[in-house]
Length: 338
Image (cartoon, rainbow, N blue to C red; front, side, top):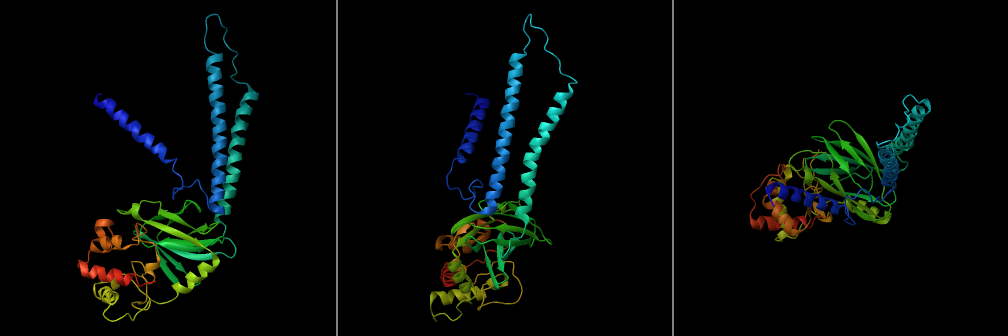
């Protein structure tokens, strides 16, 4: 096989694999598996448009194939009747496309307005985009957290969003469509989950070196569990740890290694004003960190604290050149932040 043929074979193989990815079940970023009313509205509009397009395709292609064979030039066959200037036909193929467009446009416009309308009695959450992580604030409860958005199931949530640096985009495919986060301008997005479940979020706009690692989680839970979560999030972190413990050593590493320049831990280091890095007060309760790019476990924390820029290029968290002992102590301390 020559190089040209091999290149075509490889291209075909790659395309085949791409098509096979569409067959994956329970894909976390699957936009065709709605899990809430807003996502369902988008899904219904998609399928309406899809089937109208399929019908138009087969009608047009069918008419084309029929014309090619029925009116093909053959010896002794008379010239088909010409229809140029036929007013009836001109009116028909003007009205039919208009009706098709109206069948798509009317439900599209209705869906756009329905999705934009602020729901009654909605939980309001502020979403701030940073390079490369999402920050969440609950004004009604005085809570600030990061990476994991926690919401009660079967309850409308109104997100008020903006960016702290560059253009970002917030997307939870199973709960709603995309919405831009713009510096100096607020945008809004509604979410609602049918049941208690974890959903994936992703920044949908290229925003720098680690754009692909700017992810998030939306954790839906029962109303009772949500209330318990809120009550726990309002608590300050434990300041007085057992003297001589590994966690106490880790607290000193946190206070002395420069972490306080960017992070806040309520009750331990809770200065006024915002910081450029996530609030760590209840860090141990989050199942992901580093912009939800990594699972929250000892192995990943060890790699991250050893050299953050190696894992997430462009991150504002520098390599603090911590020793193995300091990293172990700091991980022990972070584990107490529940």
